[in-house]
Length: 214
View (tube, rainbow, N blue to C red):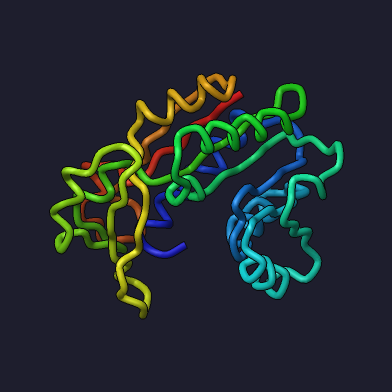
């Protein structure tokens, strides 16, 4: 996890240990399986789920013994102690659709299970970071809920802008209520002087959020 992404995952082991009991995990929107492998490294029996066949192919190549699926139906009646959603909601439009996905997650929780939602705070689209730049997109500052914003990753070779959908804290909380989920804890990790990076905005502005739901 390079640069600013490292900060997103830095506190997750501690957060998971505090809120999650059991070892059955679902990685929702697993992509190429990076966060799935992260959960497996923490001792979870983890299934990755994603709609992209090409991403699932990459995940299986990187983790030949892993379980990666494309559809909820493939889970059968299985329920999970932890459902991690690491960044998929950055790209999912429509408040109603987002709430329906969260509702499906809630229905897949075991008794006492938790959803942990990790994503981009709105502020990430307004500042400069170790791993991102937004200075070419001042219009981001005027974007309203559900509108598209642009950001460039600076620690990869591809410098084309990434197109995300901006959502604010209050939007997420309305989605949780609509999905019948309760917010248990809310984290906004900041960079520290002891971290292995020379932070830009990360020590004063949180680029990420971590919501814990039941």
